[in-house]
Length: 219
Image (cartoon, rainbow, N blue to C red):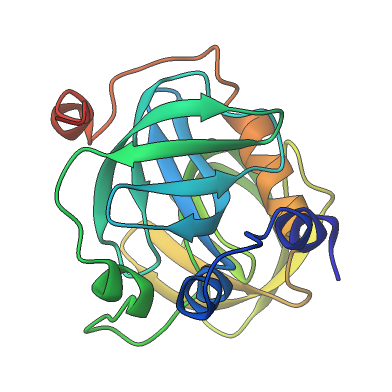
């Protein structure tokens, strides 16, 4: 069991009825939060009609109003009501169907949670070394943007700040973008640490969810 999962288990709700305990158990899964400074990995600890408890692998994002995004891409504006060292409680800024939230159904095939994480990357394919931009990152793979054409199914290695050198297989390319599946998946700890390294909280810029963030204050 990872340190991340151990933190979650040690903070599981006790003294609740069976239904609440079952619902909390279903919540032991990854999600991400979208802040002005970037996107960060988190774990959903529990949920109710009013709010949600989150656990992080680094300090809690300092912004009071952020967006919670599930693996099925559903987004929820949330506002912080209490904060601990690496966990925090938020109230929803909109009405939430808890059963729908828990089921996390999607019209798309289930895939690893992807987190946008812009950063410069050095790519080595055979004898060719190029540079590009990291677009998003998950435990299982990454997406890049380069000016170089890459051959699907070929192996390459890449380096990005916050991670040791990684080896992966090119799975697709469309224009200047291509995706890589890692030979050895990242742990949640490695992914969270890399995201935080690439997107420190101090760097605050407008994001695609700015309009939602402005409405995140719960009634």
